[in-house]
Length: 205
Ligand code: HEM
Image (spheres, rainbow, N blue to C red):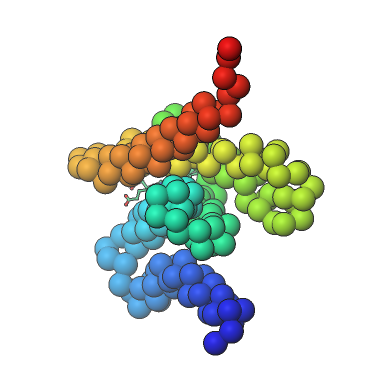
């Protein structure tokens, strides 16, 4: 198998792995296997996978740094875009299926329920990242500005975790697990930037 074909096969596998939760959701939905409250189950499922892909996207650079898994870089955009897709479907389910496009209630929710406020803020911040994800947009913005803009991902994922933590009523173990993973990933990034800056700082006489 040539390298080009192998790369394509791996890319297709990654793409399918990202699409798999959605395909399962559709399958379960069509076969009446989403439990007594299918709307809430679907809404939660989409939100959870959105968060998982956003965190997975943020893990790629640290994984390259720790284990030298540079091949992962190629899939960062795909994983991030799938994260956006799941969150967008999560929001659409909330607006269309959960609230039946009742814009007054939706606006009240956004203003009065902190978990919805933080979730919405996370979604709004995700839009510029999704819009600028193409190669043409990277060229248009220039690498430096593009990288600056995409640092928003470090705000969006914690907003998603905060949203999750605030809405869980009883057991907050899972939101805290995600918070801990994010703390490690973001902590590593801060440490790395500081080390790099210290290394390039001119030595004073
Ligand atoms: C970055 C954006 C977002 C992320 C990562 C996210 C993630 C999540 C997660 C992980 C859950 C809990 C899943 C579970 O219980 O297993 C959830 C639930 C939920 N989210 Fe989001 N979400 C986001 C944005 C939004 C937005 C914009 C809205 C609506 C305006 C929203 C509305 C809800 C609702 C209504 C629930 C279910 C609450 C319940 O169970 O009663 N989310 N979301």
